[in-house]
Image (cartoon, rainbow, N blue to C red; front, side, top):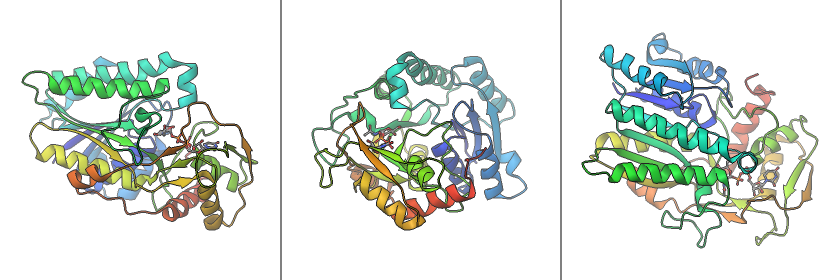
Length: 349
Ligand code: UD1
């Protein structure tokens, strides 16, 4: 059975991916610093899997991806018991655009330096299969819509630069002579929603920065109102358009990418993961109000620095390469996200 090291495995996308990995028979080692996540997400994953051998199949290690000695030990310990790590899914990192503008060195250190450290340990232990969590933010303001992978990489904030730098690092690694790396770079659009049980979901520490958890907390009465960043964008209702993808569809995409790498020789994939359908901020608010039966009061304020008008994926490459297709709608995202909010008013706390 394959063993997968999941960095950042207790985070929003990481925890949903761990669940599907376990459901698909993989053994999982979670490496997480819990800087922006709660270990309780992994307890929920265990509860959802439910069988008695889960503690043998799921290991949790608290630690930082910048700690070479720790990662080295994680690989070594597995080799010693004859159960080596076959692949890594790398989520660990920081992702708040506004914070990255104010504190770029944090983003270069955790995201770029952390990934370099992780790759060095993988290289030493001859584990050369990695699925990397990138972002549509690497495209900046795209020239063509929907955005395909051939669009120019042109990030507009330090967070985006850190993701683009890691992509370049992976590309350089793949292109070294005699390379035997297998690499999948997945560029996410806007992940939202939660597991349909309402047991796993997004757990922002402090006030959320992203639209969906903010809407959810306003609907629940935890926040008074929402600020809509601009109503004079070039879009039908004037608010910005994004490609919102259900976190379970995204998690499925990771398993599909991993299975592709494990069954193909030296591969390098760079794939968009989105639905291809865009919704405006007002459309998301309206759908959430319909599902929750709650009002989401909002006020229009000026545009947020670094935002773009429209971001919608051309995901045809992922669909053809991985035989993966998102199946959940915006309505499903709101139904599941609202269930998570109702069952966990303050996240995992
Ligand atoms: C961006 C990235 C995405 C990344 C995410 C990480 C782009 C195109 N997308 O998402 O790949 O994973 O950051 O954080 O760069 N909005 C409001 N009011 C709010 C919050 C948001 O109106 O209080 C609007 C934004 O202007 C935007 C939409 O809601 O139009 C979605 O915003 P958000 O959820 O923050 O994600 P992005 O910034 O699109």
